Image 1: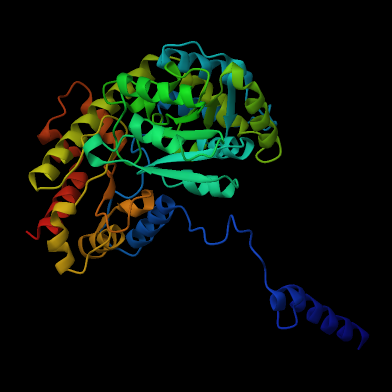
Image 2 (image 1 turned 120 degrees about the horizontal axis):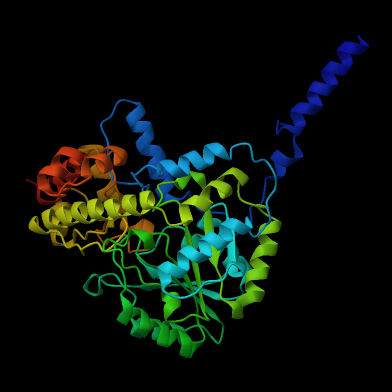
Length: 448
């Protein structure tokens, strides 16, 4: 009986502790921190999971909703990971020294200005590093919209005030110097941290030298720091990426990583470049890293050294990716414009941000008055996964969508593109799902 009694009492206590009817925790509830309460999951990740679930259920889905590179990591990078799979040690918080040297050399070439390895930090994706910058810095985060879905939520999680600055289609969805000047007057004397994404997600547009120089003049005069997210820099369609760091060198932090140009998003390897004059902020981010992620994965850091060193294979693969993405985006833009959709041409990355405002009346007749409803109906009725402009900080009633034109077999397309002109017949043969998706979107908008 004693044995049975112990079992009964123990079971009762265990039920209480796990949140049963007698649990004090369950009775009193859990109070969430205001920075977390009400936050929704990342819209991009949520859409990717939804599309995967629909596909698993047997639905045909044209997946333009998730910005993952369609291209595979270069074979030499995969081989390097295989060769270093036995690495199991904790690496320095700031990153493997050889990798920091390689990253510094890579960005020195890309930016046209020297980068010192001591100012490079390695982390498990640039996303984590951007968050730690906001956590470590006492500043107001300034986010031009449309903007990548995580910038503003990260500011909230870090307990930082965030000011959004709407941009306009007529300006190519780019922040203007006048708009930046105006928002600086609203900071109440606090330091501002401008988050600049170039090439842009969700727009696919870039800024160019003259525009960056004009923004840098405002930033310098107003004492702004710039967090320049250049994760798509190597995918500038012309191979001519220009960094904000060239024009505002003492006030610009640059983030990048392997996910887009090396097709290695799931590897989670990012880097942060901090100028000498911001050594205190650099060290604070490193301290925060030591108390959170400790260090990025050892095998991936060792393998990534080869990605950042110049090689004929990686250079050729990058050039081919740029040619394919430029041709594909050009076809999509031409088709959307022919249907009457407002859309800016893409300069880099693999996104478009079309505006279906010209069809507002026709769409309203179908009960579609918000971008969220437009995206929902495209998926439900036409099998095309997109993301609404409202997920990127735009007004709910603005009928914008983000299209990620990556629903194709990147490895097969790279092989087929060798020595070939990337024309419409090539795109129809090798990127047909993207073309079909665009046709479906145009038909849904126009009612044809």
